Image 1: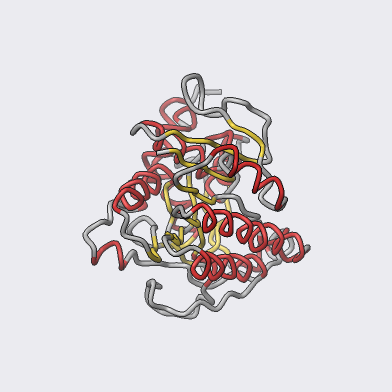
Image 2 (image 1 turned 30 degrees about the horizontal axis):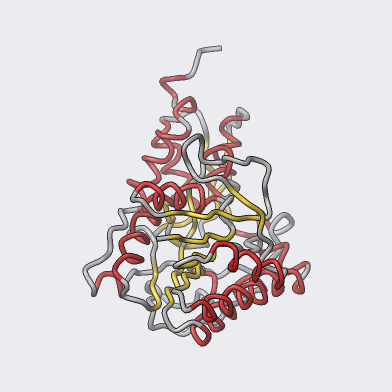
Length: 313
């Protein structure tokens, strides 16, 4: 199957493209970031330009590629950037999604749209399921939810998949929370601060990619949550990082979100904990517990930061 992937150069694409290619799919990877023509290495798909905000370019790529399916990863994911420039967020996350959805409908092919736990307001005391009503608190969440609505009403055969706190990509692609902590460790920090008042579930990109592949090939279309098992705070995730790396030399200090308010002013939900309820009910949930997945990620991508591997000063 020929699969067109938008936004392929990011964290999720770093795992998803090789996963699709490994089982024989003809992957056409696109992005606006073309710094590396072969980001997945020799023998893997290359990457070509596509700006989903350009209606004519989207039409041209669909006509040239003639895909059998499209996976839409392209998005503005920064909450601060989205709040600072709502037009940019809506152009990328809503209008760009509309352009892709319209071409998918015209071609009569399935569309997969990656969404986020950030569409919820965080007030629920238990995990969010696919049957809860979204109520986004910020521009990013609102724009991603509007993208969901466009896909649902435009493309009959669709997957809308909500991810949690994405983890993966290694040093080159990881620009999220785990990378922030890893960078501090690499830079020799002796104290790390992490918030205790924000709850969620890490979502390991390779696990997500494998689970998505199974769902994609099943043809059981619909709305899904796809996060690793379990829940925790940012503090819990940081504690797990230090535990896996054996970094007893680093002090972990609990703080509230106010500690980082100047750096991250956008409103964030108190809870982004999700349960993969529909996957569970269909017997298709292959996502592992987040503590296991985060441990594998650290030992695979950052082994040099382990305490036993460090050279004494």
